Image (cartoon, rainbow, N blue to C red; front, side):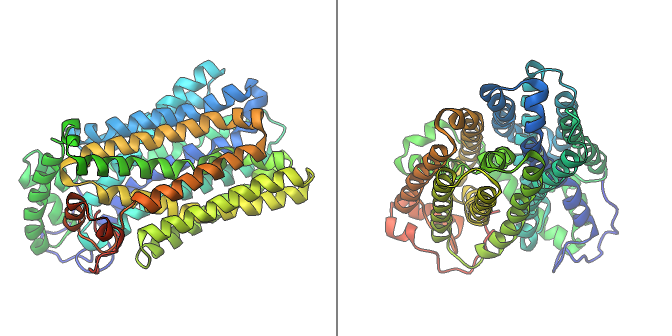
Amino acid sequence: MTLPVAPGTATTADHGEPNKNLKRIMAVSTLGGLLFGYDTGVINGALPFMEEDLGLTPFTTGLVTSSLLLGAAFGAMFGGRLADRYGRRRMIMALAGVFLIGTLGVSFAPAVAVMVPFRFILGMAVGGASVMVPVFLAEVSPAHLRGQMVTRNELMIVVGQLLAFITNAVLGNVWADQLHIWRWMLVLATLPAIALWIGMLRVPESPRWLASIGSYSEAFEVLQRIRSAALARRELAEVTEAARQDYEATKGTVADLKAPWLRRVFLIGIGIAVCQQITGVNSIMYYGTEILKQAGFGTQAALTANIANGVVSVVAVFFGIWLLGKVGRRPMLITGQLGTISALALIGFFSSVLPEGTARGFVILSLTVTFLAFQQASISTVTWLMLSEIFPQRIRGLGMGVATFVLWIVNFGVGFSFPMLVDAMGISNTFYLFAVLGVGAVVFVKLYLPETRGKTLEELEEEFRAGDRAALARPGSGTVGPHHAA
């Protein structure tokens, strides 16, 4: 079902802010990002109640938390292919259904044996959303608004996490004596899932996907409804060419990696994904309440204090999006990694030298928000942008698919192992371990990461092909904005 706009009417989507149809598309589709954030963040406050209610051990705590992340790895790997085959709009609607089924399953799970498979199913929806929603937004947005619209999804992810933290704090404080309150924390995610499905009924299909299956008249009809008639005619030719290029990208196989320069780009992409996760960021996003409890807060105080982590993440993403247009990717990433390493080392130090109590709790809280400020403003923001920029057209589909899969698998490893690491090594040594891994990430970025700011994708590909390390380390001379590769 498409959005009615009189053909030939000039729209503000051509020159300036999105028109009302694009705003509706953005508001509805980014509910997928909100669900991504809420479902990954809500476990943070639900765990203290689930541990007592379900009798969780460090092993089963890690399993319940990380089963979603394992599902997300497979959802991300297959989600893009399914969206290519069946359409962006149709698959996002299907995702809404999977979100709903998964949420109801985990909310009513009577035991860990039921909880884990439904968390895996929910994770498949999260992983699918991490791929499909940004692609859909990029394909429906005009070029000058693409960065703004795509990064809105990143913002909605951290807003979803903040919403989860606030919900956890309210429910956990008001009904603290109710062991089953964690079920209410989880089941509230059904509301945006239903809203996403209903909202997508009024959203048109991606014109690029329609062109990719040869439905040029339908693609033109959609463009007329989200652009002016003149711009729609011009853009149809661009969409047709882009569809052809996308088809070429899907033909990339592992055999293409025999070329040394392509293999190098492929491995750098995987390295970027690993570097984002080995900072241990999701140990705080998933176990922040538990960390604050160990630092000295009570359960209710920890739930409330954890809201600060969500607020800082949202503010930091705003700042990071602004910073992308001002600073090169390499210095931005290295600065973020040095900041997170320092925060991790200080968390480890103060966890061991300060006596347990409220004072230590506030010190650890100040360091977790400092960590997240560096992580969300630089590392996480740069990671997704870099992954969209560095892969040549020939292996873009393969590279993005594998890199995203690896990112979620490392995320799973961190989420699964964290409770057991803390149980075996203590909180201090666990964060020292993350700090050491962060040093390795800095070395990787310094030695191998290219600078992509101000370069077209073609320029970047030529520098990789030529093996020009000096050129790869320099920013481009162009004035291309931070999302030129979207």
